[in-house]
Structures are given as structure tokens and as C-alpha cells.
Image 1 (tube, rainbow, N blue to C red):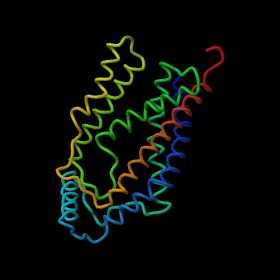
Image 2 (image 1 turned 45 degrees about the vertical axis):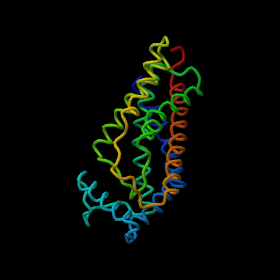
Image 3 (image 1 turned 30 degrees about the vertical axis):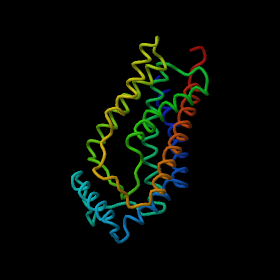
Image 4 (image 1 turned 90 degrees about the vertical axis):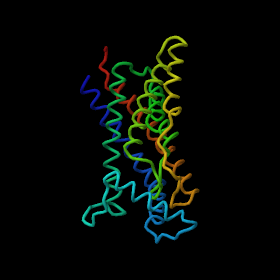
Length: 240
């Protein structure tokens, strides 16, 4: 079973990571590069908005322990950035695939298409639900304290996973009601927000980035769920 889980995670994660990297390079990364041009441009104060965003960003980076060291290495645009993105996507995809394969060992999908439902469940837990309070942000966007956002994100993921599990596999309306409550709790508490919502990039670019990020993640999770279900079923021994 351990070998079956590992093989499922490795192959499904690789395929999903390739798809995610391709989608990001075609849609998401160009938006980030465009936003970086606004971030690196000379700040022009317009009613004090740009200046306040820049100041807030520097304060946030200092509070989070970031520094702009001239010797710090970062991948250059082009193949270095694509390679770094692809490798990080591979690590993340294999990790998520391990979670799915582990869950399949407890409750295996009876049909391959049911893997799509598992994948969409992962999309809701790890992407859609957290994005409702903390939408994807372009460079140069004012943000709340990093640690507070991380705590809220983690709590939202845990509550959403437990809520979906109770709704999907719980028996009785009481249990499913508890599941719905768990889905709502993080959003009733509210995600940490910056004092001023500002961005150096145009608002239309920010909206497109949110849409691109969510759709890309939805396709990634769909492919990961289907691939994991297929590889897991393929690894089943005859007569098991």
C-alpha cells in the first residue's frame, strides 16, 4: 500500500505540476511581470495613494523580516524563473497527491471520474475558501501582517476540510449542519486586512489576476484528482 500511494503521488503530481506550470506561464506569470513594472517604476504620488502603498509595503516587509540585500539571489525572468516555478509546483503537487492517495487508501473512488470530485474538494479547501478572505495578490499590494494571514489561512483550510468531510460523509442533517457551520466560521471571524486597501497595479489587472489564479488552481486540482484516482486504481492488485 505504501508503494501504491508513493507511485500514485509521484506520477499524478508530476502530470499536474506540468499542467500547472504551463497554465501559469501562459496566463498568471505575465500578469505578475506586468504588475512588477508598476512596483519598480518611479513612485508618482497621486493624492498620496502610491506613496502610502509603498510605505506600507516597506513596513510590512520589515515586520516580516524581509530585506532587499543586493547579494540576495532571485531567478531571472525566462528559463530560470520557469524552472524554479516548475520545481516548486512539483513539490507542492506531489505533496497534495500524497494527501489524496492517503485518503484513497481509506475510501477509494469506485470510478475514475470520482477523482474529479476529490480534486474539486481540494480546490475548495486549499484555494477557493481561503481566497474568499485573502484573494491572490499582485506585487505591490498592501497586505496585513504575514503571521496573522498565515494563521487565518491555516485555520480556514482545517475548518473547510473538516466541514466538507462532514457534509460528504456524515450521516444525518445534524452532522451536515455542523459541517456547514465549520465552512462559515472562518469567514464570520474574518481574515486580517490591511489598514488601507491599496495597490500599485491597476484594479483591472488585480481582478484578472484573481480570476487567473482561481481558474488555474481549479484546473490543477481537477487534473490532480483525476490522475490520482486513475493511478491509484491502476495499482490495485487483481483480486484485492
